[in-house]
Length: 440
Image (cartoon, rainbow, N blue to C red; front, side, top):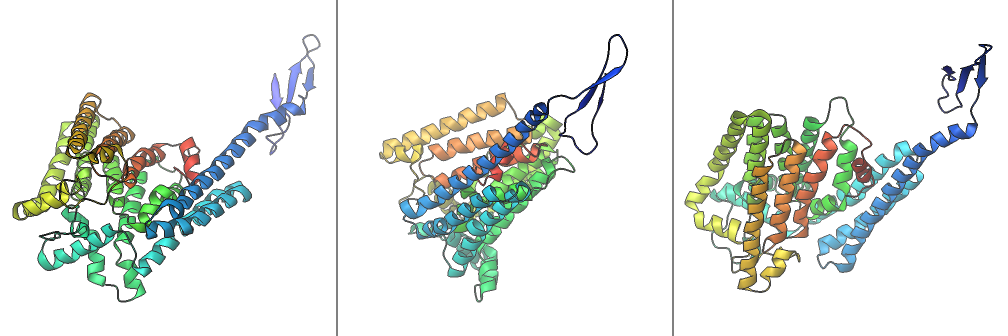
């Protein structure tokens, strides 16, 4: 039997030659055209489903943004929701009307412009931000003038600096440039450098984990950044974005066996916030499973020595201040309570008084112990597995801590999503399709 196909017409009917059993003469048989039409239906159905997912994702994002003007009492969040909701609606319209080859990029561009760039620039020019941005910029000014980023006798919420010393680096542009004109006002804002670090780390993570000669990271990165989970945090505060980026990059470097660079990135992570400390044992065990004890030891020693060199001087000279502001304040153990008060389980328990607060801390310790046992019993063998394990541990910590915000969960969410996108060689993976719909 032989088959012939018309060149340049892959969807046309195929002519099949059958040999007659007696005469030996080949007889041409042309199948019904309905068979060829049916064969094209699955592809069309997939494209239709993809477009539906994209439009629904935009609608979910628009609904998320619309909720802030209705339920929030924070002016900056209300402003972001009022500007971002129409942008997400426009993105959905572009997904619905434009040709497939242009719709995803146009929708992502509209979402980035309307949900990130426009509200961010307007808020920066007006000098509006969440209190943590002011705290970081003030800590940089204190570091330059006094040698310490911490106020010695905090009396108000905004006097507390709950971050480790390296976080002050993001406030240095404001301390050096000031805000004398619109250019320096924008370039000096800490939110700009939070976002730059976040994007640079995710791009580097993609390049490390993605197979060579594969898809560009720009569309998924733009879509992730424009999603409400990241866009809101980036526009109004963004202090957790650098931590998200460096944790993803550290796991990618460890998965590729680059022990010293992984250790250096972990130095930055561990000197930004103490919540990043679980990333060190996860990365060390990943290196140990894949490359042996020596690379794991090199990364661990690099991270511990580098972090100690940055934190130990403050611990020795200002130990009480560091413990009160960096540890006790976030855990709700000071007279002035942290404003992080989303109704997560730990916060709800802490609201019942000292007994509830003790129960919350006990559950937090038990949860950390459980994740540690899981880590030792099933060490990760890939960047995706390491990020999943770290995401579980951080989710347990954020939900059971006596004080926390829903925004903190962006860190484990990106840890689960981004390494999977980067490590997956198939550009039409379902998760990519969902992200292209401007949602998480």
